[in-house]
Amino acid sequence: MARGEGPLREAKTQRDAWLETGFAMLAEGGAENVRIEPLARRLSVTKGGFYWHFKDRADLLAAMLERWRDGRVTVIARHVTPDGDETAEGVLRRLLSRYLDQPNPRGMAIEMAVRDWARHDARVAEAVATVDAARLAHVAPLFEALGLPPDEAAARARLFYAYVFGQNLLAPTVDPAEAAGQQDRIAAILIGAGGG
Amino acid sequence: MARGEGPLREAKTQRDAWLETGFAMLAEGGAENVRIEPLARRLSVTKGGFYWHFKDRADLLAAMLERWRDGRVTVIARHVTPDGDETAEGVLRRLLSRYLDQPNPRGMAIEMAVRDWARHDARVAEAVATVDAARLAHVAPLFEALGLPPDEAAARARLFYAYVFGQNLLAPTVDPAEAAGQQDRIAAILIGAGGG
DNA sequence: CCGCCTCCATACGCTAGCGTATAAATCAAA
DNA sequence: TTTGATTTATACGCTAGCGTATGGAGGCGG
Image 1 (cartoon, chains in turn green, yellow, orange, purple):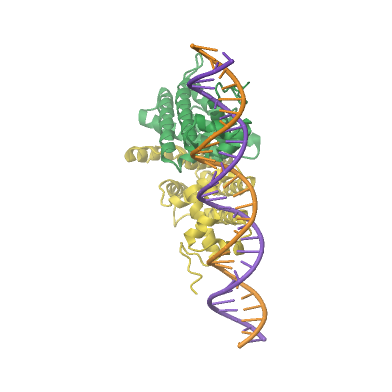
Image 2: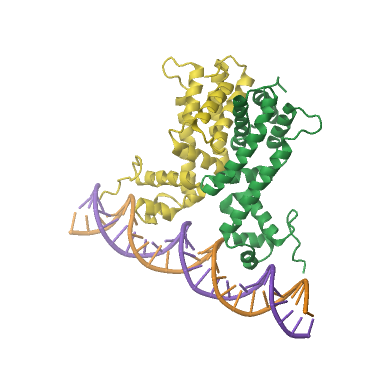
């Protein structure tokens, strides 16, 4: 039987298919929305196999959280390495645009869903803290490379990420041209170098 | 009968008691957590009366949303009026500290819960957009009063609020002294006037 | 006093989803 | 092909919560 054919993304194993579909549900409706039976329906299987791969629903959520944490920690290191002869300012602008110009609504939806989830679950809050610490630790040196002292650079890094996530919480500016202009001005404030 | 004795905050009517308790549940666990029967248990009544005051669960949520929107729109006007001879910078610093120094964890929890709720419900998103527009419209003039041109002031206002909400999404800095120092540095960047 | 109106209690049926038990299907190897 | 290990289907009982129906307690006007 073509049992292993994952219907979503590249899911090598059936366990991965459960996890990937779990992330889809997480992105769409938050952690509360990750329910076994709807998941099974989306995978066109019954929940029979679920309890082979996972002890229970909490076990699935825990596996998803771990995968999310490890993925984010791994990926941030790659994102802050310069492309070719890119400057620190270039890296920062690229990062900002990656987070805000939404090439990846799924990733940001998961990010927001996890952060909401963290408000009700201490283990999740711990994972978020780990990811945040990794990101701040990777971004602060970029600000130091711009000539700022360590304390100031750390504050800038925090402002940088708070802005990125806060922007996703605010209602979007209606006029796209105005939004783009504001984003340029804000990037100039955050990154410091003369307006983009 | 002592029927009207509201057990929470100042709930004048029993309908208010349902709403207030609804906000408590919202703050604690998000919109998904606002359930009729647990609400009734907390109010030490049965759900019998609920369907007298509200058509159904959606009706309660809609009433809560309306109350939240109107309350936020009303209150922002008061918060931006100077206390005595307060300067625009003073107002901004007071606002920032009101949002970040958490004298009101309940209010911020509701704020975050509503914004999460808005990601899954267009009506909520509309209410959030209304509140955001009101806040930005009230705060931008403060930046203009600091001498910034309107476009720059609007961008600063947006950055201001994105930071406030983003800060509540990031894992808190562990060391309180470091957190306070960072907040001062960030306030200096946001509000512009020399640090401190 | 009586009937009415307001508000709440009680009891009911219904749905969604969790977790379990058990059988069935598939595959790999002997 | 038989055996054993994996993986999935099916069927079950259970809980939480929604919405409805109906009755009843208390206050109030007539």
